[in-house]
Picture 1 (cartoon, rainbow, N blue to C red):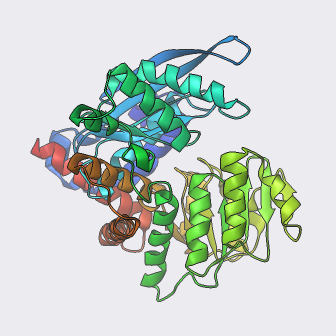
Picture 2 (cartoon, rainbow, N blue to C red):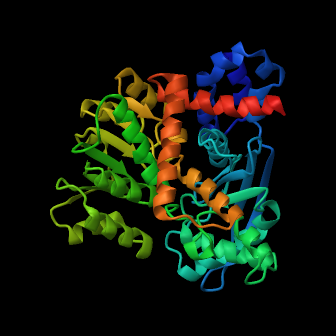
Length: 444
């Protein structure tokens, strides 16, 4: 294994995020890989580490003052063994090939865990939506779509949102894509081309619960983790990081389940609300972040009993459960040690790979229940898959129906993790996802 990983490091130099994801995965699945000659003969691991295609392109657009601005755009189509390429688009200044390769690689196995016929992909741009006007965001989205359009399609590669890409951005990109495709206002052709993006508005044949799916799914997985130990989330103190889509709906669902959520954050600092969030408070956070695009520090202007702690993460606060929902590697070893010291019994990842390897080691050594992102945050892509199914059938299911299907998918993912990992959800998720993809590759 070490010789294999050495070759991987040489072949992917200067790609730390990708190498981090690969090493975690390989260490989990290596025993299975070695025990199956059919996997080795087909060089399954070697194949999985190389994307089918990587597209890079220049995106040129104009600011409100007429200045020509350039950004880099990407789409990485990693694997279509199980179905169409499927994965989100991220708009953030940190976006580079290493980050998108890590996200695309993880997406293969996350999608496999859902049981749906979905391959893995990822894309995005180093465009920073922060501080941009509505018109600038629209112009960028349309320019980006013009370059992306040749590589996607409802039966080939179906993008969705991620950090910096929500319903607003999907609407702009879908509209531009339909314009490029010269699709009319109605008819079968429009219905098919609309299915090229998921995360759409309901009026554009989107799905109920898609906006809430990643956050809700995270809590459904947590519910299953606790159930194994005869517990529920009711009355437990919960730390949440982030204040974007995943965090908002993780807080909302945790509240509905009776938990006491006491933190939320952004890149400038975090809110500590010892009274606990309620629906009115999280609705205010949604307004603050989704409509006004303000910083989380504004929360304390309305809710004066809460405290804003600048330039800090929420991991020093005493609690029972931690849900990191911000970004990759937000929990480092020191943070993990502080979480354990402050009584954390369960960590479930809402963001993609928010815990670095040394932090995960701390959790596992301390006996903390640890839910890895490829299992715990699969709710978003699960409902994207359901949106694709609804589009294909010309249907639009009720909130209740979609929510029930999401809950069942998350229960199934938990079941697979336990089946292949016992009490180790990290190994279980990696092995279950790998086995489904590897068996399909061998069969082909």
